[in-house]
Length: 557
Image (cartoon, rainbow, N blue to C red; front, side):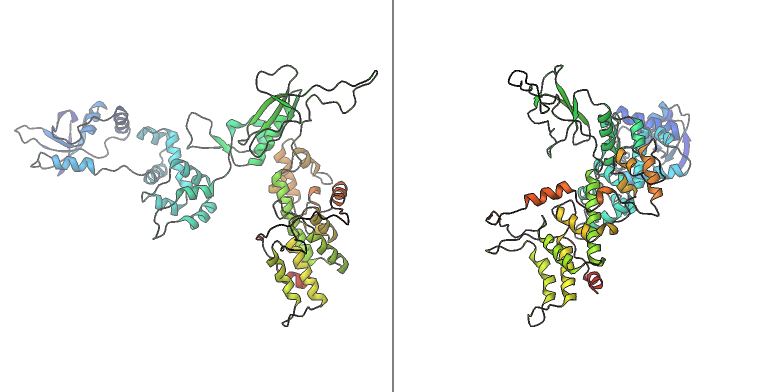
């Protein structure tokens, strides 16, 4: 076999070639563009004619020769091989059957090698007749963990949606998830669905946003393009859900109609209309009201409704009172000062500070016993009556009570032992977290009594300040040299910088409960002597981490 240059027009087609079906116009266009850009990479294989002619017969590369003629090439390189006994039938069959396209990982590696050699994405797209978007999509594999890439190269590839989710996650997140889902000898296949599910983050799309670029910049929203989405739609998105919803809320407040309100939604995504409101499903009339709300995708939606007419006052000279029905039935609700995520963070801060205060702060014995009673009055604790039933989570509390007994089962009345057990039980019971462990207002009272405010962490971080509304954020600038800025993100950044070495505690995080809420709790829990309405609750399993008894022991000493 040797290499030589020939005129492609002088080559003779082999009538016994294996691929008889014509190739598609798209495939021919792709190969033609590639030949025009970089030439023929793999020379066709030919052999001398055996029927007495002086020409060469094409054994492999018939399409390459045909499209080289179409490209106007005067000469091409060919490999001249000895003629086969079967007129090249087996060689042609094997050559077409054994060919395998590059997988996505190898394509990405080849593209990266071309980029390193100075090729641009546009030039690669022209040479391979690929859209630039497809080239950029393949380059997203650079964001995939190398261990995942090595496994994908073996042929175990996720689908496009799963690959998009994986490539969008950070390397640290991918590394942690890969530890749990990497293949083993017993199970060599990877559950890419589980990997993508573990890396999935909530996305808010720009096409669903009603606000413009000004609010997007004010809330620090950075759009990321989803290169795996269809090319004919706006695929920009952000994972900063709080900022997106805050910008949507501010846009609704600024664009609220004259007879309009900002409504809430139920857990099923349905709008909550004012009491007695009748929803209008047809065309709205002039006197109807509008309710704007955010659906599950963060889009601004609006519905129309009408309120019943106010009743006419009876009697001569009677006038309508202040309790007459409002035209809209409710007032517009602005974005709360602290979002749900912020409230949850405050609950975590309070709980950690309360536990630290119970472990380290000085507490008088009478206050300690009072707090112990309050702990069992918490809404996350259920105690059955003396007539039957058991404690909810009794094992966790009982293990601290065991320390009050000696080896013979006799109760020890040592003050230090009592203090350790009491502090431990209080920390097991009292909680301010925004979940089923929340003790309610009694935990707030406990934190106020032991001075847990002094143990709250510095809340002047970007993570927490992003949960505040514009007005609450500007209110946090009070008593500081920081002045409110035009953009929310600039004000937040200035506060973060100011409190970097100091300490900031939002007023909403302080433990002291509101007097009205306290009075309401006292009134609702005042039980008459003959009240026997207490109910028994079935057993349940407890959860949560155990405080370090060593800290309580040091505090008691």
